[in-house]
Length: 425
Image (cartoon, rainbow, N blue to C red; front, side, top):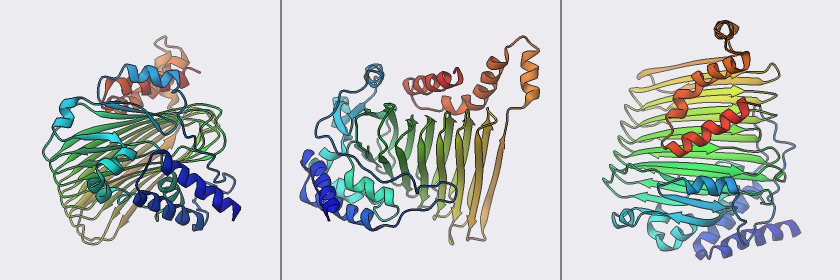
């Protein structure tokens, strides 16, 4: 009972820190009860039994963002929200966007200032009931944005949310909600700067996207998850008729993570693409599932996953396509490629097709796991290129297209720098 009381105090501490309305505090309490009663999850290739579910203690005030995060934000010209340990530090958004009806604010302010719109969509795409870690996020979420783009508004500049997480931070639980109204067009970037040497706590990050009829949403993420904590990441989009959602997920890490990136194509004619770039080093363990669920008629999806593994990194990449009964004329393609630079690295590429509809346009997959072709190395070395540089050139040829697809120069440079740093070790 003492532990339950402690957790109840933590939930109330987070809620009171952000001066949330009573209805939102009640949602947090219900989510905690769901988390507390859920059994320990079991994953096929990832052992969670020794990871624990410690959450630490929420800090009522933010720490100063790390210099790297502050410098990065300084060089960004588009709208941006900077959070340090779940607290809003800086919010930059042009006045003219607000005048056009765009809402770009922290998720805690949105619950009060835009209550009707927020309540309509909040926790409807990623619910508390689907997993132990999604319930934990809903109970303790701190930091993240609410972005609403009104009907017909097409925006060229991206919106970015930056999370700076210090070494002293307890578990991190950011949550963002993106709503694109009919025929809207928007790009969003989420970037994380995580300090090394963090305590062994459980973290749960969530992004939920509502793409209404005819809208286009692009979401890019740049993760760098350090060793020590356990990271759970849930990113899901709900697509209505003729909507399009693109995910561009980049991860350069040596941490322990379980991630889901999913699009649910509910409306007819919906289209989605997920592109994943990964570089694991040290003793990284990542269990990542890229999922497409086809529910509407004439829907299209594509999954492209590229992963490079160094040192003793271990990655499990699952590409999953589900075509439910009634989703006629659906089309889907999967392509997974994983390269092991060192003999001590390990990779699993697991394509999955779950088809419950006879009338399918196409549904295919391709997966490969292996080392760099020594003939390619030999060819470059015969032209006078050192072996280490030849290896980097081949890896960059493999990753370049996905990195270039990221929606801003600043995030492309950030991801490029992280990859270069690890390849140069």
